[in-house]
Length: 117
Image 1 (tube, rainbow, N blue to C red):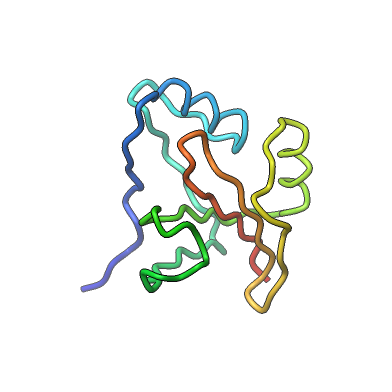
Image 2: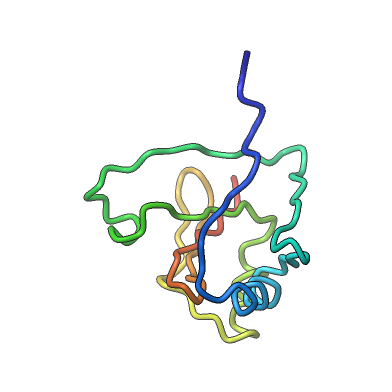
């Protein structure tokens, strides 16, 4: 018996239509009438399930969950964010696991983009 992967990511918002528009323009994720979409990962995609201590500074303490999206070319995404007027929360970082950049959605939810090494 094993876990095959995540079946979905779900959260609440006060303005579904505005958030759907933002995700389409900013992250190129088109949400359908049922307010969701199916993302089929590439064969080299990995999903990380990780816990952080409550006092971790990695993302805001008032946010219990942070969304991490694996991307193919982080530099292209940073360029796209500049074009659509979405500011990075901090400068991109390169480390032993790859390159990372952070933005937030209109609800203030941090989103981490990860280009795997």
